[in-house]
Length: 355
Length: 283
Ligand SMILES: Nc1ncnc2c1ncn2[C@@H]1O[C@H](COP(=O)(O)OP(=O)(O)OP(=O)(O)O)[C@@H](O)[C@H]1O
Ligand SMILES: [Mg+2]
View (cartoon, each protein chain N blue to C red):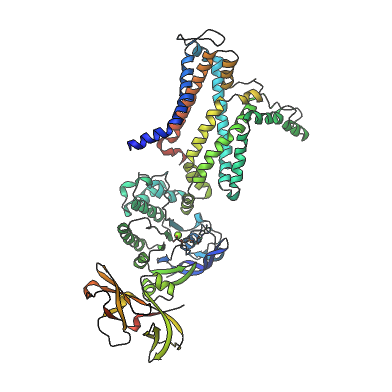
């Protein structure tokens, strides 16, 4: 597939600090790409540079192969769904959606037809005559999407479009958006700081931190194979274990973890080297007796949280270290607090992190 | 809810009493006087008479009334044309914003009367403007700038421009920039964005500006007094003279009431025209 949007070493400096620093990214045509990261990491700034509202301090952006350095926002083939929707309050829903087409001098009958078609698509067929103020948050949000997609943009930029909605509506809109994107085959660049949203919707996720890309990959790669501590910590819950390599045994390296040991698949590690690994709580098992096999840490039940389908445990494994464990409720043995337990996991399920 | 309203009234009561004492009662009083009988030299006989209105509708006064409305309307339009770009510029002036706003407000600290004297120096036959134009050889005879409707319009525009700038500035300042970005995002050039988004969304400011400029402009009398030496009249002059020189309180009151009715009427018509059907004429 060809590249639709390319960021070539793009940086943006505000005053003396970088909001975005040396970001390079190729976004394929028809891809659903999500920028994910904590507040202030530069997601909106990146999006605004693609839309043309901010000029990069250095580097270039290409859309459809064309360099955008001196192209004004109103000449770019992208449309934006703004976080606050920014629907024109003085126009009806119909006029809001028709605005882009009017600017392009599309014929009146065609405008009518296309606007009515997208209104149907976002299930607001009867709302054309209303003012934005007379709509619920979810309806306004759909108008904002309709106003953008009616122009058949090559790229749709969405800045936390679901941020203002309640959880249930958000889940529903996530699915609707995903379907819409597949149906229309538009390239989506989607900004969110909700990791679950990113995981369910995206073809590819770009995790940003402090203006830089930490990792880019499929949701599976981001969740199962985080490369950095930041990504492992930011996406989902995890246990991050840091320790020195004490010895290399066959294909495994042993790390000291308090007074006990854990193992990771060896990859030319040296004894004495300090390493960090991430193990997801759902990859960890809980036993009442010592296990055969590589890893079996002795500990005590410190906390147990029942959340319906799942049970979360916090196990104190000594020396001030804790391990988070998650089991499905059906697997749970009812252990009292302070019971002696053993936690184990398959060393192959741990991920070694870059510093 | 009821209690809140009661509380609101009790808190507002000092200003309500003020309004009653110094606005409502005087207006009623003037209304009453306008229908009494004139016994000469400011005398008031409480006997019903429409004599004052018959006089007020005579061609002399009616002409002044229309003339005042016409001049103030023209001045208001000119103020709007000058003030909008000015206000727009201030709202986008970044760190200079406060200084520029201050400069707009400085004239308020000096009486209009005194500021108009400056215009006499500029406009009169041997004034700065005529001298300059003659020196440059553009004219050979001094233009009679004073004593003309031109001078009146200049005086009105000059005097009331800040009233137009401030509300327009406020509405531009409050305008959410994301609407402008949304407009550009949808393919509208800056000019179109201005016409289709900025202008309609700052319309409340324009409306407020027009009203608070037009209303005081129509009744002002110092402008004609000073810049035309009383040769040209606005309704304010006539009312002042009726009270103070002719001592005809009935006529002065009748003219005041007529002026008030006309101003209110024009505001109502104006609002009807502009706010009906969502100001479609702008889109
Ligand atoms: N116009 C601006 N002037 C100065 N600094 C800015 C400007 N816009 C953004 N910044 C700074 O750049 C950094 C990145 O901001 P940005 O809005 O891109 O973050 P974000 O990832 O979208 O965060 P959020 O999730 O809170 O929306 C922040 O530190 C912010 O303070
Ligand atoms: Mg943001």
